[in-house]
Every structure is written in structure tokens, then in C-alpha cells.
Length: 200
Image (cartoon, rainbow, N blue to C red; front, side, top):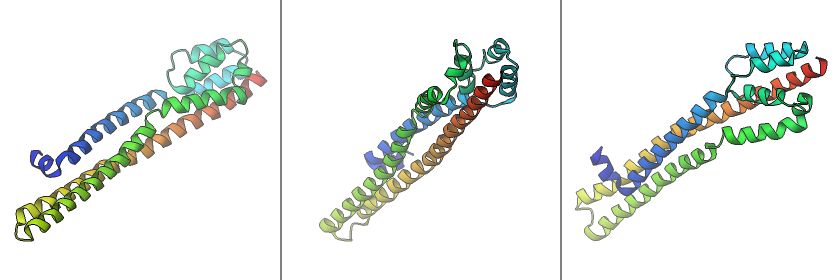
């Protein structure tokens, strides 16, 4: 590992630091989503049935301990004086937009870090090639050791940038899809709640 860091120089160190920050943000984002995603819709179906039957107190009790996004929205809405107004599209959409911002808080930064890893790899490639051409200019092709150092830096940093960026981008896309799924689930359920409140 030490040899690789020496070969890659400060660019490789920057890529490693950037990678650690990105993976920390990915873990934080995953944990936030894990708490917010509705895993079991059985209780939500029961809440809809209770509201359709006019039993708002039982519905509120069913979502009292829920910490996922749907549970938080239901608890907030059913605690108000007029739940129908709370679950109306004009009122619920700004709340869902705020939740989207909160759930995906780190996603733009993660995408930027993945792009930076690729660009740092490219920068290392250019610096390595500049070093190689500098050796050729001063010593010709006789000094193979110095010549190889520049090529080595170019290849190591390029590889490190790509190896760092690819999994980060894949996980970023997956997490963004999970945020969208979580919000779509909440939007669908709030429509069902609104319908149940009107008929209950």
C-alpha cells in the first residue's frame, strides 16, 4: 500500500481521502433511508380501514411508534384538527418536497465526489505523463527508471480514480431510486388516507 501511495503521489492520497468521505456519506444516507422506508404495509392498510370506519383515535394509535416517513406523516396529519385539509394535495406536496430534500440531503455531494475522483485520476494521468516527457526531454530514453515512474503514476492514479468512482456512482443511483420509491409510497398512501377520511 505504501508503495502505491508513493507511486501515485499526492493525487492518490487525495483520491483515498475523497473515497473515505464518500463512503461515510453513503453509509449515512443509507441509514437515513433505512429508517424512513416503509417495510410493511399491513399496518398502513389497517390504518386506512380504521379511518374509513371513522375510528381516527385507533388509526393514530397504530402509527404512534412508527418512525418511517409514512408513519411520521400519518401521525402529524391525524393529530391536526382537520386531517382532510392536511392530506389535501396542496398541503401534502410541499411536505413531501421537504422530505425529499431531507432524505436525499447527501446525494448531490456524493455525485460530486464521484466526479472528483474521476477528475483526480485524470489529473494524475496528466501529471505522470508530464513527468515522463520531462525525463525524456532531459535524459532521453536511457533512464528507464525515471521514465517508468511517470508511467506508473499515470496508470495508478487513473485506475484509482475509476475504481473509486464506479461503485460510488452505482450506489448513488440505487439510493436515489430508494428515495423516489419511499416518496412514491408515501404519496400513494396519503391519497388512500384522504379518500378514507372523505368516506369515513
